[in-house]
Length: 325
Ligand code: 2P0
Image 1: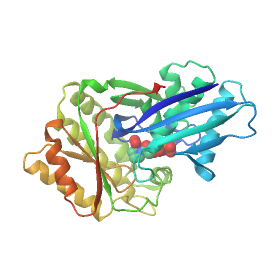
Image 2 (image 1 turned 90 degrees about the vertical axis):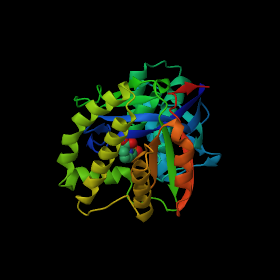
Image 3 (image 1 turned 120 degrees about the vertical axis):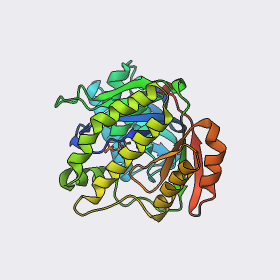
Image 4 (image 1 turned 180 degrees about the vertical axis):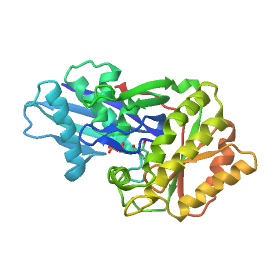
């Protein structure tokens, strides 16, 4: 009753920003992401008869508190789904993702946990069913089941049975690179969960955000199909800016950006002015991810590393979906 799975994180090009059901984690809009090879979580789940509660180690350190509760709550769902309420697990994860700084470590984390725990129970699941289950751990995680370009279909049903990710194009379709720019900044102070809730509940700009999604999805999928980088980048950047605009219209207003964030955004725009096709996207934290093509890697990396306040630049290629080890 033991299995190990590896999952990569993903970067949203069309953002998931808001829930219509918080318990089932059902979103208010479709989102689209690229799975990244650079950041992953490897998790071994061992269900054992002799345990009286779950134990969870992250990078060899025992975990308690909120992070532990989220993991056991998710395993409760798995146990309930497969009628194994009396079995507890030893869970060991290694995370190759800088946590809590706008990198979706919860995406690779819950995808690996869902895959390893169901496999440990001897269950073989369709990718669709696995994505649906994973979604209930963390929304963006449901996209990490697949490699390459992935769309999370929000679905319409109240029970969430039609809310899961589907593949758009595999990793080998197009070598779009992502530079994660790590800034000398502390952890974010508004979690993505809290941020999206406040925005849905109070932002005057929220309807505007939703109104832009259908056309963004049509355009970005067209850009992916034709490997049109300017199209992909321009849509992703504009979509990111509209997501972040909703936070300024919330009550109380907030932003995930700091002065270093704005500086990187400006640098990316300047790169475009001198003929380097690069575009930015930003999640629920101050760090910036820069999209570029392989032939510009050297120039993009050097330019970003030279900026004051940049602690690190981590490069990624398109990554694969779930693998079992
Ligand atoms: C995304 N983010 O699409 C968006 C863009 C942040 C900004 O998904 O509450 O950790 O667990 O469903 O998935 C981050 O939120 O939130 C996120 P929950 P999650 O990647």
